[in-house]
Length: 215
Figure 1 (cartoon, one colour):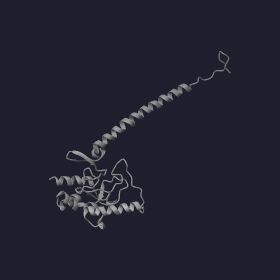
Figure 2: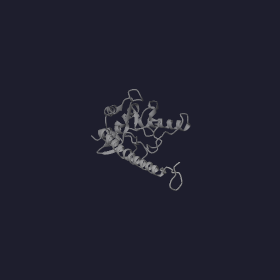
Figure 3: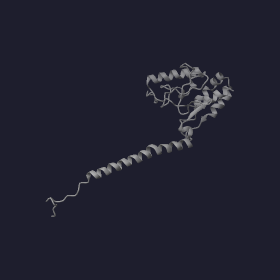
Figure 4: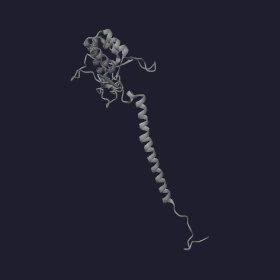
């Protein structure tokens, strides 16, 4: 066996440190490239496409009236008298919301259908809706007295919107026919033609009512 000048057998030079350095440098380069691609280029590209093709949706589907934003068509809101927790009779009312339509506190009440608290709340709500709109309790639809799973549903059924039309017309000095026409114009059909029921966006309908009342 050949020996070195020192009398010891030659061994291959240890390259673990050099190889480790190469791996670290490769990892850093990969991190830099992925950060630029996934953290800068991709978000900018997606945002650009969204703003170009779906501008309103990308901005949260805002609804404008009198030159300013008055809410989002995706989030329900309360329609109470100014400075009060009482519903304003001039406007269409949405579904009950245990969170007060707070988008930071979405979710249902989690009460079962036979829970005494829910039964009592529904009974009281049905009485109040009937009194507020001047109709028999038997005509009050389910969505008028029950909240949605999100608590911020911006829609009501077409039946509930039509039930409120007479009150809204009277309080705004508009003919019933005109208000019913607005309800029909803002009624969307079933999703995909067969899912759910015809529904009305409350914010968009109330904006239309305000415009009609100001003419």
